[in-house]
Length: 165
Image (tube, rainbow, N blue to C red; front, side, top):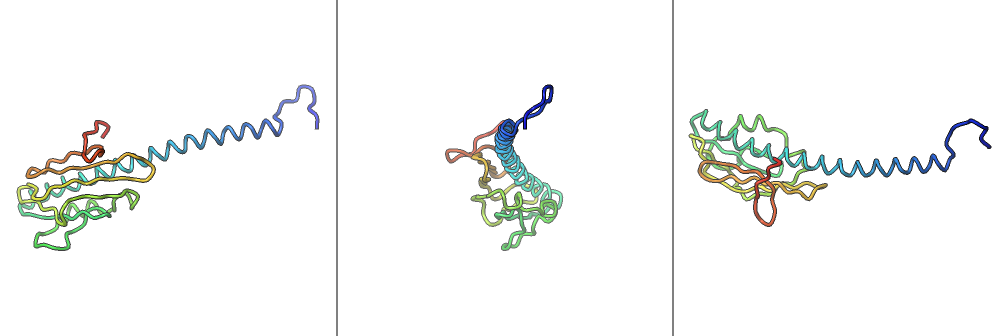
C-alpha cells in the first residue's frame, strides 16, 4: 500500500520501534518503582516496631504495673511464658503482621520484652529488618534501662543513624 501525497501516518516498522522504546522506558521505571516500594515498606515496618515499644512503655506507666511483649517474625504478640500481663492495648493497635510477611525480621531480644510499671525497660536488644527488592537493611536498637530506641541503617554489624528516617 503506498502513501498518497499529504497523508500522514506511521509504517509498521516505525510503529514497532516506537512500541519497543515505550516498553524499554516502562520497564526501567517499573524497576525503580519496585525498589522505592520495597524501601518504603521496610521503613514503615521499622517505625512500626519502634511504635510498639513506645506504646508498651506508655501502657505500663498508664496502668502503673509491669507488662510484657514478645517479638516474632510476624510482629508483636503476647508473651507465651512468664507471669507478666501482656501490654494488651499495644497489641490491639499493632494487629497487622510485619508488612504481611514481605519484610524479614531477625533480632536478639529475649522471648519477653518486659516493661516496669514506670515504663523502664528490663530487656533490650537489636532488630534487623530486610526485604527482597532492596539491599537496604534497617535496624532498631533499644537500650537499657530508659528504653531509648534508635532506628537506622544496618551495615558492617552495627546500627548507624540514618537521617532519611
